Image (cartoon, rainbow, N blue to C red):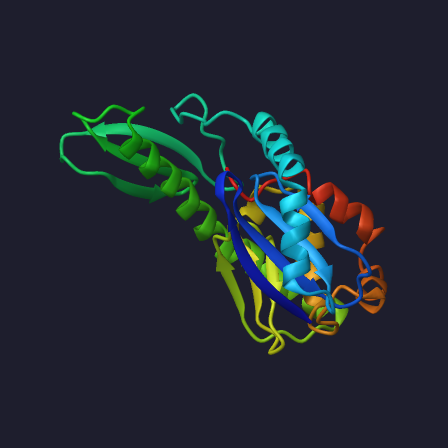
Length: 239
């Protein structure tokens, strides 16, 4: 069970304070994007949590700066550096039609940009980025859905619906009703990690938390779930 409150701390930005059962002490983290999360014992008051945060402002600033230095610089997409997906390559082409559009064919996604528009412009880059997302979504609706059904049937899991989403910070989720949500960016992961995420969510159809029973269940289907979870943290849901 989790209760959450959000607090805005000036130059730090928004902080998420989460009450969690089963933990005995406060845990403060700054993630790769610079977001700040404070997990606290369920019986601790939000007021005490806020006092703790104010005492850690300098530590948080240093953590956000460290994460900002680690983040790669923004990629400017061109024909030379758009990575292919599992089933499509990309070609950027100029068009006289005066508008942006996509054209899919077997193994190819063509991105058409108006002649008067520079490929490096913000608008063109947004279109190219969205084109990659839509291509990943198109593939994921076939590949990930099929793989999830295979793993569910192989291991005796019941699932209701499988949905493909573009999630910013989660690789997947599972509802109590057995609806499995998968991040389309799983298409960018090595197969053993995308399978791990799928099995992770399937295990949640039986255990709706991350307690010992959940990890014991997951370890029936993967080799060393904790190690795979750690490896997954090296990847980002952002391109």
